[in-house]
Image 1 (spheres, rainbow, N blue to C red):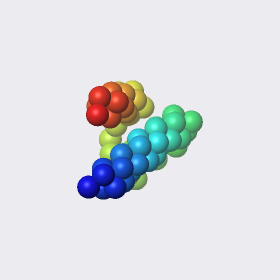
Image 2 (tube, helix red, strand yellow):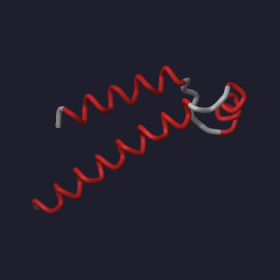
Image 3 (cartoon, helix red, strand yellow):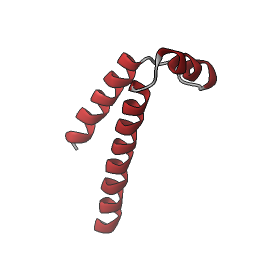
Image 4 (cartoon, rainbow, N blue to C red):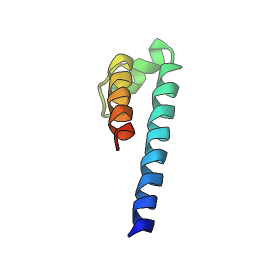
Length: 64
């Protein structure tokens, strides 16, 4: 059971890193590229929303 929990924590940390990298890469896009993302991909969040979601996620994970 301990191994499964360690695997879970590792995956959670990996997911958190990936989400952080995603937000940072989105942040680096210029306005035209951001418009393309909002047109071509299923999420409609702007950078402010993404940062807030990431902060909420990080706060939740840190409490675990």
